[in-house]
Image 1: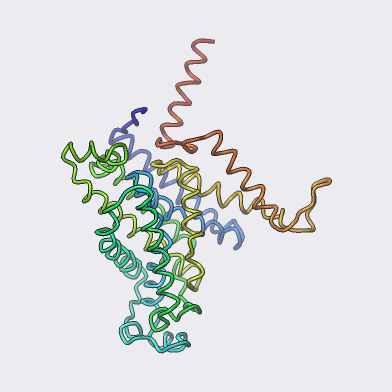
Image 2 (image 1 turned 90 degrees about the vertical axis):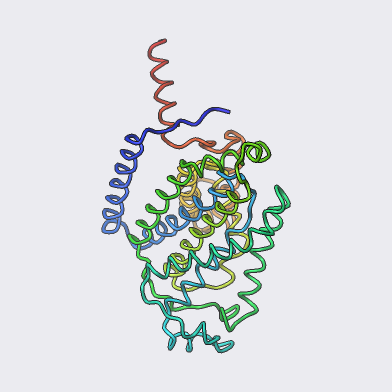
Length: 355
């Protein structure tokens, strides 16, 4: 396995400051230049960037085949909706059954505090779940965590006094503006990068490469896996809270296994263990879906080819197959984007010297 390049502190801070400045400039520029539809798509992409890098932390960096994201995203979204709505508004929204007193009376008007609480609730539940979950590995772990997502969705549907049942909760205040989501995404990506390239992150990679060897070397594998699971759940809960506010409503149908499947596709395309790969893959995934959208329109045609409903997904699936065939470990593998750029520069320089 190729050794991953470690950045010096100066290189790291230079990249962080430079990328942050460029991204914030893009946020400000796009907010006054792009139309509302484009900003909505970009905002949704930023939310999925948060979810993808969070999911890659447990699935790619720690190497634990988990299928739980939709459950923790749902928890974060519903906690945010319940906390940010006033008691009077909740009384009007809950039509199937009166909300429990602790659901109705709780009210936190501060959006930052709401998001933190949403993440902490998701993290606490992840901590409770981790004790039975990490008694198994591999495919068994995937099955157990898959069941967790179904359990959360079933609870949301069948306990209307908590979640308003299948009707969900609407009228969620839209505190998550386009710039707010972008800044949150930037902060979370930086935090995840620091975790991945810390001592904690090296322990996670050791477990991914060989858990038994890591255990023999003195690494508390259960503790590291649990911390990775809890941390991932915290950020997924925050992402769910942003999604609830950005969309303005939450319902159980938003948090099916399809959400987990989309995130799994994204981190596999980008490269398991590559944070920048997850970011690039998120933009490619949703960007391709939007670019190919006209193919579903029967009025669209390109020569003899006419658009038909479902053609977009056929073309998109073929593109995914081609990517996986020619990039078996994803676009970046375990490398980050700076590793790819440096390797490309070295190859170009070597060809010039040899040519």
